[in-house]
Length: 323
Image 1 (cartoon, rainbow, N blue to C red):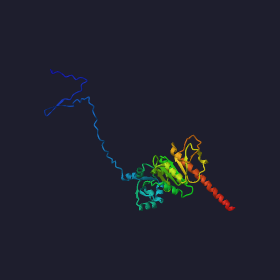
Image 2 (cartoon, rainbow, N blue to C red):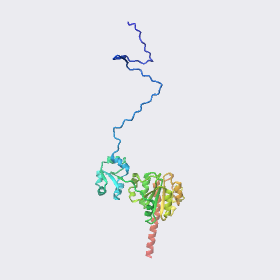
Image 3 (cartoon, rainbow, N blue to C red):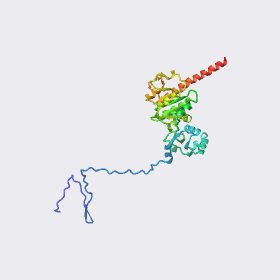
Image 4 (spheres, helix red, strand yellow):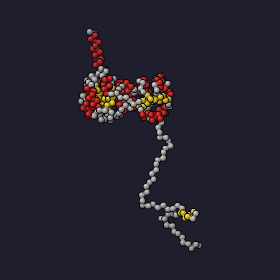
């Protein structure tokens, strides 16, 4: 038995490795790491770059520089009205459709790039929207000056101009434009700030109405309303607490119909600029209407009254001839 003392390993003491001699140097395997009281700062590492390229495709990058429209009716209207189209993406099936074939050839002759693509590519370009097999890249919308819009509107008898006060939802704005053009209004005025402009969504929702409808964008809406007054227009504003029900008001002469944003309605400054505030009586528990619905109902009431007056004059003229 060996007389050397045996080393007792306490339970709280970590085990050390056996000493190893390397070229005369004493090295301890698995040395004990002691943590000092100093704060240990984590090592900052730069994120590893992804293997996938972050650069967008040339076509996707170009669609950000100008607006994008999609859907058969909006693109067809743009082609028929010879809008300046930079590029068209279209499926092979739709390219040779009789409604599009000749117009596509004409656009190509005018310098438009025609790309025949698969539906999946159109899904990427339109971010999954209902493109119906076609999309087009157009130049930004060219707004009309207010003076020019007034001159154009007054070329017809009893013109109607719609003013949208703070409509931020492009779907609402597109629906208002579609209804206004269908009813026979001569144009639209929108503010430059705190409101939606003419975007691809507005073009899509308007279903081609913008090809035959003028829009003016103004910096100061109150000043624009005063300018319309000076041009002989009577200003009617829609408000939930309007002084007169819309069906009791006699609409005659040049008219401006002001539509407020859903929920907020017309601003106080805009209300002061109106000659008459009108309301749409509601019988249910819903306190208000969607802005585009209210615009459609008020515009139709204007159209209905003028249609009745026209029919009455026609009948009166026929009766006088018989006499």
